[in-house]
Image 1 (cartoon, rainbow, N blue to C red):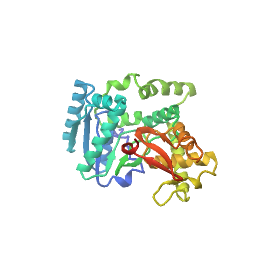
Image 2 (image 1 turned 45 degrees about the vertical axis):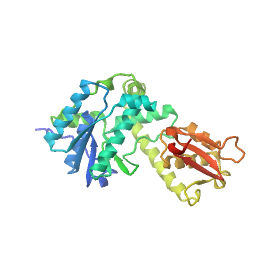
Image 3 (image 1 turned 180 degrees about the vertical axis):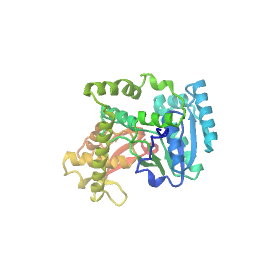
Image 4 (image 1 turned 60 degrees about the horizontal axis):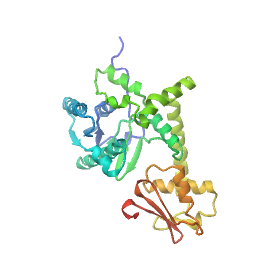
Length: 322
């Protein structure tokens, strides 16, 4: 007789060392986050679930919140429900609803982790999400093919993606074999934003054109790029390129090749926490480094600013960029 629970998902090996204590799970009620919740419970993790109601989808969003609360009650998992007025946040910050929702979720999850005495938040991104991210970043001109990382530290929080190696179909099979249900976000099936169009139109067209499933290929390419970038990071950190205050010392850089300068700038700006860097941003910063450059500063994403001052490159945060 076939085992009804034959599909077993294991957390990504890079995440395993951080799953011994309290872990906050971003629980939307969708298949991916429901699977993540079960996987972490099976690992014996001390899980705390957090659901964010974005104030966008009306009764459907209310239903999602009820589902998450009931699921956690059945599994004896501590649960928090938070509301965010995403349309207002998007308008005030002049960003898309998608960006405003993501920023609100990150902020709420980080606050939840702090209250729970945890520095670990688990997100339910999987292999299909990774493939979409790689294509999205390539289309935007982002530097490199590096996708999402299984472990990423930001603002004192470790953001884990334990299911990053598994496909959507594997996650679906895992839940179906266990008789578990989830809620469907109908907005995911509407090709109204770039990521949805990549999921619904671009990836299927690419699969048809190459006559194969390209998700594993794109994931493998992203992993190889991540390894290359990690090796480059280790090499760059051994070089005397910064002053004691951590500022980039330009005389050590100006005589190097353009390719080397761009690699250093990519590394330096990423470490400064600047999101959404593209090749164009790197080129703009490279253009202000020389003493004879017509400009000494340039704007960067999220309100950051790069400034050349006294043979150093300074990165000013948003509150100081004016």
